[in-house]
Amino acid sequence: MALQEVDFETPDFDVYPVRHDLASATSGDTGIHITWSDGWESWFHFLWLRDNCPCAECVHPVTREQSFEIMSVAEDLRAAAAHVSGDGALEVAWAGDGHRSRYHPGWLRAHCHGEASLRAPASTRRLWDAGLDGAVPSFGHDTLLVDDVAALRWLESLRDLGIALVRGVPVREHGLVPLIERIAPARWTNFGAIWNVDVSLEKNSNAYTALELPLHSDLPTREYMPGLQFLHCHANEARGGDSLFADGFRIAEALAAEDAEAYDVLTGEAVEFRNTDPDCDYRYRVPMIRLGPDGRVAEVRIGNFLRGPYDVAPERMGPLYRAYRKLVAMTRERRFQIRFRLAPGDMVGFDNRRILHARTAFDPGTGYRRLQGCYLDRDELHSRIRILDRRLRARDMSPG
Ligand code: OGA
Ligand code: ZN
Ligand code: ZN
Image 1 (cartoon, rainbow, N blue to C red):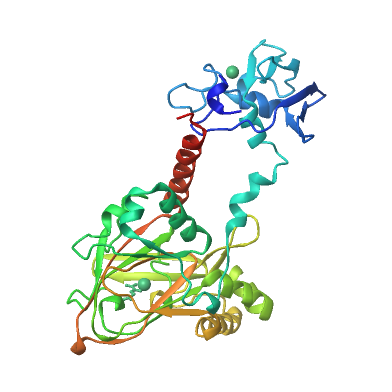
Image 2 (spheres, helix red, strand yellow):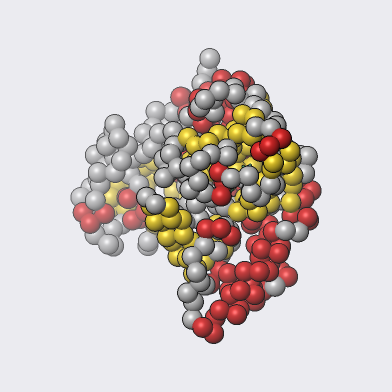
C-alpha cells in the first residue's frame, strides 16, 4: 500500500510506506501492545504515544514542530481506549482530557522501539586498510550534479568508507562549489570558506609550504572539528606531492587490539591542540581518540604540527608520550595506507574526523601545484543523505 492511498497525518516531513498492517491494539498498565499482520509485536509507552501525537493541535501543521507540552498531561497518563480503525490507523482516546490521537501505521512501525532499523545508521560504517588502495569509489562530476541516485551513492561512500573521489570537477576558481552546494554551503574558518593549498607568501600553515605533511586531521584545534574536507586539484606538476590516506578508526581499532594501554591513554587523556597565527589563537583540549555514547570510536584527531605543549600530570607524561608515539608509528605503517596522485579535475572528499590525510613533500622548482578546498560539517552530509533518500522514496511511491 502506498502512502498516497492513506490519509493519515505524520508528525514530520518524511514518507512512510505501509508495509504491514496493524492487526490488534491492546491497552495495558503502562502502554499499548500492538500486533502486526506479519506477526511482529511492538509496545509503546503511554507517555511516548501521547508525546508523539501528530494531530494539528499537538504538532504545528506547517513547521511540523511540536506544540504539545509534556507537562500538560499527568505522569501516569493512561489510554481510556485504543483500537485499530477501519482505515488501518491506531486510534487512542486519552483518559483525563479526552484528547484523541491517530497514528500512521508506517510511521509507528518505523519508530517501533524494538526495530533493528532504528539502530541502522550506526552500522553502515566500513573500516578499511591498505586493501582499499586503487578501489576508492569514484564518481563523475557532471552526473552528480543532476542525478540524485548517483549523488546519494557518493554521499553514502563519504559516510560509510569516509572517502570518495570525484573526477571531472571543472578546473577553475571555485570550480568545486556547485557540487559542494549539492550538500551545503562551505563552512567558513579562519582559512576562509574556499581556500587554496599552494606555496604562498601567506604562511600561516605548513600546508602553504612545500613540506611533507604527515598523516593528520585538519583543524583538530576546533571544538567542532570539520566533519568533511574536500580537496580539488587544479595543478599537480611538481615532483612529489602525492596523496596518502588512512582510516583513523581502523588504526584506533588496531591500537585497541594491539596495545590496550596506549588506547586507554589516548581515549582518556585530554591534550591541547593549537593553531595560532598573528590574528587567531584556537585551542581545544580533547582526547586524541574520542568515543561516542555507544563506546565506539567517534573521532580521531592527529595533527603533529597543531599541538600545544602537553600539560598533563608529571607522572602521566611518560605514558602519554609512549601512547602518542605508538599511534603515530601506526599511522606510518603501510598496512593502513592508501596512496594516489591527484590530477587536475580530481576532487577527493573525506571525513576529516575519521580519515587521516597526508601529502609527500614536493619540489616547487619542478612545476606548479595547487589545490583548492573547503570544509563542511558531518551533519550536513547526514542531513543531505536523508533528504535525497526521502526524495527518492517519495518518487518510488508516487503513482506517476
Ligand atoms: C592541507 C593538506 C594536502 C595536500 O592543506 O591541510 O593536507 O595535498 N593538504 O597539499
Ligand atoms: Zn494531538
Ligand atoms: Zn590537511
